[in-house]
Length: 374
Figure 1 (cartoon, rainbow, N blue to C red):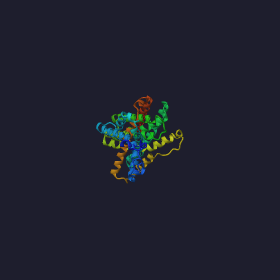
Figure 2 (figure 1 turned 180 degrees about the vertical axis):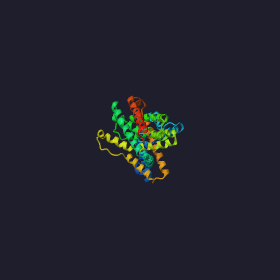
Figure 3 (figure 1 turned 60 degrees about the vertical axis):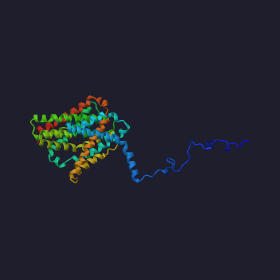
């Protein structure tokens, strides 16, 4: 007589063992089952985690731009060429990284926010006492040179059928301080899909023209029989970038180098004024209320603080160096964002505008020095 079904008397003991369930039994403290099982984060750890999540997207691009800036600085110090030009050219070589997810955000941050911060710190380089020691006539002449060069840029852009924005961008870079002015002015122009490419073209062109001027202008001024003071004034009034002004001025004499530096500082001091002129010139195009950018206010505050003498020399020099690094890193990032193929497509009329503006500024400065200066 058989026993009851499944009684277990005639079956293998192994067959009686319960088979594992596809879904394991619920364990209250198993990982992933109960959120309370995870150890709570402390306040400091939560802050670190939040900061990491905010900084991490920018790290790759900022690191790339910083390495390029350091390389450009090293090459500039050893080969004597402008650091801005090296930063641009090396950055362009890394354009293939500009759209990588690990670099895009950091590159964009460096090219915009870091740029504005560096421009704001430029105010620390102004020396009001040194500039006013030139006297009123040279100061008025410099203001006239800047306004005339801006007007020349606007006229040339009209004659060549280019946008007024490009004429103001090119004119401001030639009139003030080259690449730094071009970057600052571009930040207050109306948004445009070609703005970055136009800015990069202007930066490359004025840097190249400034390098040529550093070599040729001292020879030209000495051939005209000008004194060291006159030559220094012309170097500071006509060469675009600060570094090239110092190099050209001191290549003539120490006296010419000092005068050239003072005049160049005066031109840099007019950067906020030119930026405001550009902003109000395009007020109708923007169709919005014109406000003063935060970095322009920062520029003015830094200039006032630096000339009040309340900041010790060492921190002031350190902040000036921070400003320089910010601008070099920003230009490196702009180089990475630049497509060389698109730059090549820029029409020749853009180059002509910059060359004509440079020659125009040189001509009126020489005419003033030789025939009108006291």
